[in-house]
Length: 272
Ligand SMILES: [Zn+2]
Image (cartoon, rainbow, N blue to C red; front, top):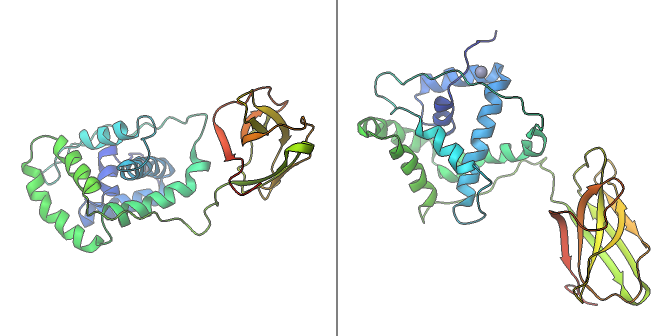
């Protein structure tokens, strides 16, 4: 049975923050079980929330993540104010570049992170606190106050931040290079590589120590297990390397590396 009405972004945001009443939570959960559209929206929202949490003292936010998150929160009427404003059903655009695949593990981690880090493990206690606070929140006039509270939790010095990963989460890609400059001998063994899109290839680069242009050092594609290698590519002898890098290029390869560098390592970091 599919309900044609979707859950509003505001309710999904409150659900992600576990700030709905138990009745509302049950209703949302029931709907989510049968609705891919709302599941996807929730995943996106949790991803943004996790990005906000992670970015507090780490990486810069991906473009728009904070804005999207705050915007979702910002359009929310205070909970417990009698009737929460129901907005238009979500219209989900099916973007061509579906970003689900690479994000799947992330979202699983994000969902756990929201509970564990943002709410500090004390879910039951916090639910009670949140319910108690609902009456206070109702008296707060601006929707900014909710976003502010979220920011306060996320930025509290005593807040614990824990990254959770699902057991099946793909380990990070790694590569090992053995390089004998005098002979121009180079061997790369890479693992846990992401599958490459059609018409693309990975390309290895030698970055010379003298500052000259990166030298293309072989194209390679990962096998189904994500392993790839380059063995003795035709490169000049006697080039002292500053670093090695791997980029994603068009299938024919490139003369110059295309950002971003997916794998990189400085030469000489593990002995000559
Ligand atoms: Zn739905």
